Image (tube, rainbow, N blue to C red):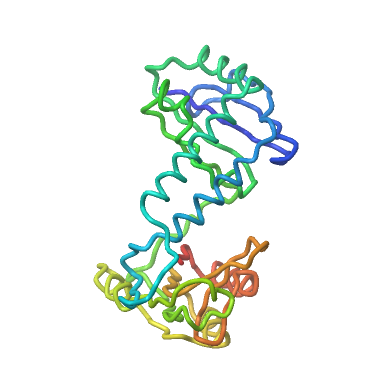
Length: 277
């Protein structure tokens, strides 16, 4: 039987730091040790945002077609690599602060380096969930074979997939030049036909494509009949200072998940199990 380590990050902020509780025990058993500590204040979210921006600017994305003579402001692979290394460095500087050393010492005392161990990061903070925790030097140096996972507050669905699996494929706007909010980006087109072909090649599925639907058409389709999977291919964007993203469902309309909240809740009750975008 292996060990289970729960790294529970509770209330706090990057400006003030976070309270942390470390729980250690045998897998599938109540924890035998519980240690409290703190994560100090950090600007690591700035490093993450820089890496994310650089990664999204990579030129070589197979689904994007760019006119040959068009000048782009896409990132280079080297720039993305440097941003990733900077993010890894910031992460380890933060997690190896003196306030964390007691927690890591307790961990090393309770879990042998040769033991089988699962690490679960428990947090409801979306920015913490996005960080590359597997790059923590503690894992690389002491527990290289450890399983690392994020916890979830939602109970997985117990419903079985029907046969065939019903997929609603939303093929949205493919021409980025029509997105007013992204004028600083180069004009690019997405080859959604490649996504549709890949879906149709899956065994045991029934795919219904909606080409650049209106909001009403998409909402009606989700309300009228059950679907197992909702798939979106097309351009999307996010507004500066707004954590919420938008799907460009056609050349004139964009849609946020907030606007679809009630529709998606109804779709989940009817059997929707997965949404991909």
